[in-house]
Image (cartoon, rainbow, N blue to C red):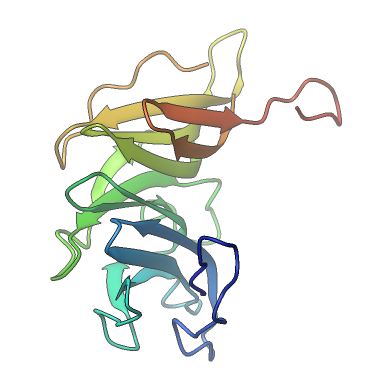
Length: 212
């Protein structure tokens, strides 16, 4: 990781984790303003698949967590693609979870989440389900602002005329109980927070090989 000055310069990169095997991958970051949370996949083995790990760092470069980081989720089977956000009071982390789909099945997973403060332990390493239907859910993302946390992900809709992965949203003002999902329209790939609203971006298949 690296700090970036207002003029775009940086004092240089620094290591967040040891980088040795098992490898780390898919990092994401969220900031409270004074403290940032960096999350990533910690690669596992065939008998102990990937977990989600994080490490918090203050604005002066002091790490809150030890070199090994803090385990955010070590649920059965694999956890992948973590995304983090700051909701004004605490960090929210969501990820693709395969606790219900052991190898070699793993068609796609579910979406789980948990939360943690700028210091202290993770509230619940098992996490709570954002989406855990029999159908596949994928590409989780999270954004927060104005007291609301928005989870976005793609879920498989069988009913005509869909029969495809569709954009799905769930919002939460409290944990661990996201509100019921609204009607779902295309696969979400990113969410971002603006000053007055939560903006969404996604990809839509418009032809055999064309994405917009």
